[in-house]
Image 1 (tube, rainbow, N blue to C red):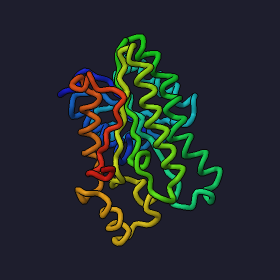
Image 2: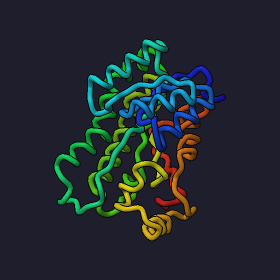
Image 3: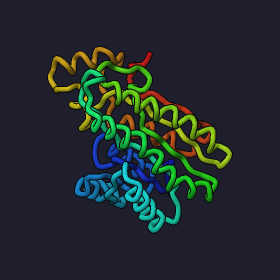
Image 4: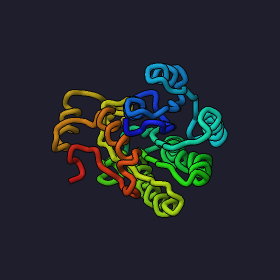
Length: 246
């Protein structure tokens, strides 16, 4: 129960890695705000783990502000923020990705981190404590071809994590990131273009441990980094990738 008494917002928590993190946090004793653009799915996960459902569009400032106020109204504080919500464009040559797809990727993967920081960091500064975890990707460290702008958005997130960590350390706030390899999540088919045994085998051949990241893998790593057991760890982008980036 290493997160006992902690309060946590997890975005994109209704499926995939986010749901894995929300479940792990609840199992470790935290109370979780299950934030997602999919209202019904957020309600289902919240009911499962005893959390609070919240509909949010992480790329919209007013929506993020409303999410923050929901948490403050319920708890009076926010101990942990996990910026997990993310999207990708379909595999394509970089010059063929539409402007709308580019804007959407950076709105959800990058602008959202700014918006949650704008709303939530002041509360953490007032408490002189807090843990922020950004879910980046091995794509930001070792990019795959034809996912150029997704790769770039995750590289942005890794740099943002380190910049946030340096600025917020004097306020008692830690900021870290996790870099998963592709996993069994709703985004997997988008990364691969199509989901076939041949394409899966090609992906898996690049991962030394021979399997995808799972929501449970992410939940375990996130629980540690957001706990007091990691109180001396900040500015780290930890790979949860089975050796993919070696």
